Each structure stands twice: as C-alpha cells, then as structure tokens.
Figure 1 (cartoon, rainbow, N blue to C red):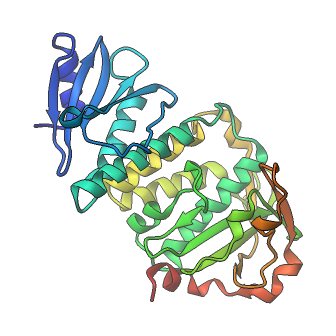
Figure 2 (cartoon, one colour; figure 1 turned 30 degrees about the vertical axis):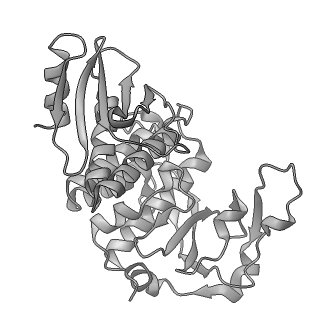
Length: 322
C-alpha cells in the first residue's frame, strides 16, 4: 500500500482499469486508471439516502450491489490534475482522522460534499466586499493565536469561512465565531442567512472588525497580501494538515496571490467588537419567514448590539471549553 499520489501515478502507467491500493487506516481505497483518467475507488456501503454528488472537475459513481458496493470518484480531465490530487488528499486525510470505519465513511462523504460546495464557487477576482470579509477572517486567525493562545492546528481545523460553512470558525466543542467587517465608524453588518445568528448551546459570537481602506503605500495600513502571507506562515506552524487546509482555502477562494490586482488593497484596522448571540439578540425567526421565501439576507445596526457586547479576552476560553 502507498500514498494516493504514488498509487495514482502507478495506476495510470498501467493498463485500463488497473488498480493500486492506497494506504488508509479504516477504508479500503484503490487508485484506478479509468480510461486514462485518475479515479479513486472506495469499497463501502452507503445508506440509501446518502447521495454523493459530482463537483467541479470530478464525477462520482455509486454502486450498490451488496458485498461489491463502492464509490468511484473520477477526474473529468485526463491524467492526474493537481487540483484533483489535492482534492483526493483532502478527503483521505479527513476520513483518516476518524476513530472507526463507520465514522471514517461519514467523514469521507462530508469532505467530498464540502469540496464540491466550495468548488462550485464562480472563478474570478475577489470583489472589495469579499476581500474585506476575508481580511477580517485572516486577522481573527492571527488574534486567535497571538491573543487567545490557540494553536495553529486548532485554528485551521475550525476555519470554515472559505468552504461555505454556516459560521466562519466552528470549534470541536461546538463553539462558533461569525466574523464580519465594517467601515469606520461601524454602523451596520450584513447577515447572509437568519441561521447564521441563531443562538447555539455551545455559544456563538459575532466579532466585527471596523476598517478603512487606505493607499497602497500608506505605512499605517496592513497590506492584504502581507496578511495572506502571515496567515500562510501560521498554517506552516500548524503542520501538514493545517497547511493543506490553507492551500484548499486558496483554491476555494480562487485567490491568486501572484495577481497584481491584489497589491492595491491595504486597510487600517480598528478595534475589534465582540457580541454574544444569546436570547434577545436581534434575529429573524425562521418560523416567521413566509412559505415560498427561499433566501433572506439583512443588516443589523451595530449600535443595537451593544447590550450583547463582551470583551475579546474570552475567545480562547470559549474555543477550548474552559
């Protein structure tokens, strides 16, 4: 048995439908030459209601035939494209972290779905609004290590913003953080879904970073690309899994750090604001949304959130469950 990269290379060098076993602690996984396309075959029985969908760059076939059940994920492009290899490494890593064969299969399916959802994002340069939002998430990652005392691995395990998660950071104990950016002075924040600010038992905070855009040459500001590089270094401190998550995030965001377009973006961050989402927090109740309304987005006045304001000091304790 061997790594997915070596196994795929060996399979593709052989005859059509040649398979090579891939190392995995829980699942039987095979690399396959599928008519010159790299394919991953997982021998597993999925429940009838679990459907693994296709994604950008890959197709999924599920066979339910008793003892011969399997899921095949094939690259839509010939050979072994680098993004397809990263995808396979990601889903295999996430499933290998499970503590049983059953939970490994669940983790595998969830990882495929996660990659499929963020892979569906339209390609292109990020807008200013998107850059501001990402800037705030990256700044918070630095704060979580520097001020809250969290490890880099824990931070990247929790980071789901680029992957379409409900909240930007979701920690193992269930505590979550939703990150928002605002202009100076902070007047309102945008909520993209009512579910985003529903109170949860483990705790949910909305943190807001007010910031002004400044000239690309203003030394008082923070360069967007410099911040990207700083968080990349944070990922390196977290080890191979954290760095893999970082690379996948760049892919999900379609962020090309070599693009000159991103050199112009520089911001002057203000003081973080933190609000606990507890009973009484202004929300739109799901039951109040008329049938037939499929998407609700709205804005909250920051001043109206003052009764829920707390200091930033408790972020680390909340994430650790102290």
